Image (cartoon, rainbow, N blue to C red; front, side):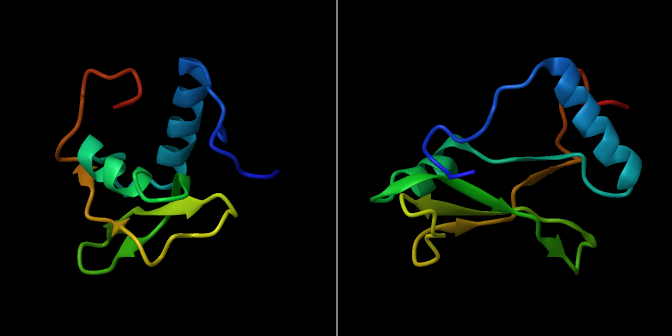
Length: 105
C-alpha cells in the first residue's frame, strides 16, 4: 500500500480497545502509551517535503522499556534522517489518563 499524507484509517473506540488490550496481553510489562507534544510533532511535520511521521518501535535498554522513535517521512516515502528525530516521549505509566476508555486497567 503506497503512503500518502492521508495514510492511516480511523477506527472505532471498540477497535482501539481491542488493539490496546491485545498488546497489553502480549506485552504486559511494557509501557501502556507514550505522549508527544504538539510542538515536537510540528517540528517534524513542518520540515520541507514532510508528508507524515513514521514511528519506529525502539527499546531503551537502560530503562528496560519500549521507546518509540519518531521521524519525518518525505513524499517519496523516505525517512528524513537528516532532519528531526525524536524519542524520550512521556511514558504511561507514570503519566497516564487513568479515566480513559483506552487505559484498560
